[in-house]
Length: 498
Image (cartoon, rainbow, N blue to C red; front, side, top):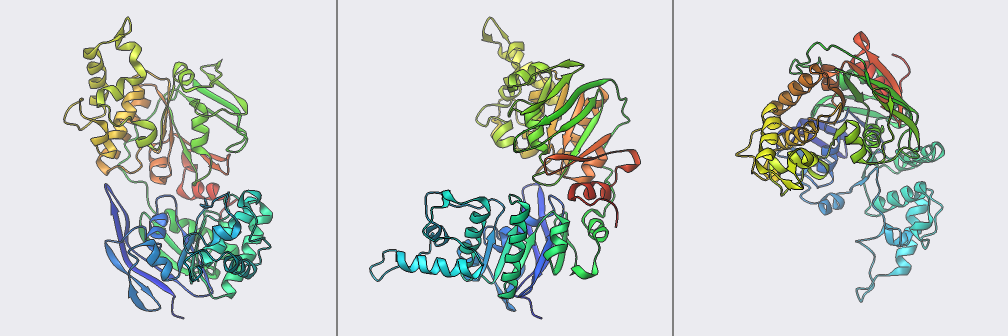
């Protein structure tokens, strides 16, 4: 059978990272191909290439055996490629029909929108996917599952031949997920080629006919789902040794510093409990949407838990604001340093001293020399590469911006530092510097929480690892139990090795 769409030798790079390195992918009519890989494997990048958002630097795209290009999203749509994303972009104040045909509504001879024809076409599309929805209904009156059906109908309104489903069940109930499975069977019967992206192995084995595995931006394997086991896929996803660039030093674990019990949030996480010790690096691993960052943001006072207790060195602390967290000795280096970490437009030294102005001011007046001295001390320890401390932080590389954000919080002299994806998107040299300094902090007695989606980083830097799945702690590993296979099994919900 000839694939509807094939990719060969696709390469795509971004500053400091090669997201895809010569990957391949085949999508067949009437079949579901599962694209499998851990976070950072290149799945999102390949979807953006397929939908015309990114352009590959190398490689070929063929449709029905003929080489083509998708220079724009419109070109991908014209070739019959459409995507249904985890977070559907719909408009609550418009009708179902208007949402389905937004941007390409049928027109009358006078160029006006042909409402009657649009509603009739919408009804036909909805019926084709067994969706019992009124084309005239306002979207705001529909539930999440019905909105997903509208998104699917919109995708099919361009006469799609290739349908990409990116984590489509993330926001659905158990009943709605099974309804989606039924819809996938309908699309297969219509001859659609489906690319299905999911971290849930039960879903993959339930509906996929074929699989393709990416790892670190590279193609690893492909084949028939009937010929592979869960354990095989896990090995393909993580099949590498922990790299020796992780300079973890032997730790002297001390007394408990942070104790969390019963932390819960109405929508993000539930019953989170753990203890963090002086001199320890505690890793948090999980797949996208597991709730790791949300827990850390609650500990830092960005959001408020609905219940639970937090103790710092045995004393109960009620943390309702970030200021209270800093006062308690907890600081948080966010994943999105550009929006949440660094203040672009301000120089490096002011970014570093921003949370510590009480140390660099007298009688309400800032002392420039003390600001510079404080910033110089902490940026030097992190080996910051910059022309001067007067340089706009927005002009630094991603790795150096990360160092500024870490320096900013270290200057507050915390007891606990939370590092959320501390090396995401930075080059290998800066990664090594951050890892080395993280190890140094732990050796000095600071308690460190590291949230990371990179298994080698988690295993290479952590004394213990907590794995989260769907807002809860799924497992905790230490010592010989800290293996790539155990982390992935816990993250995707596999009870035991196959």
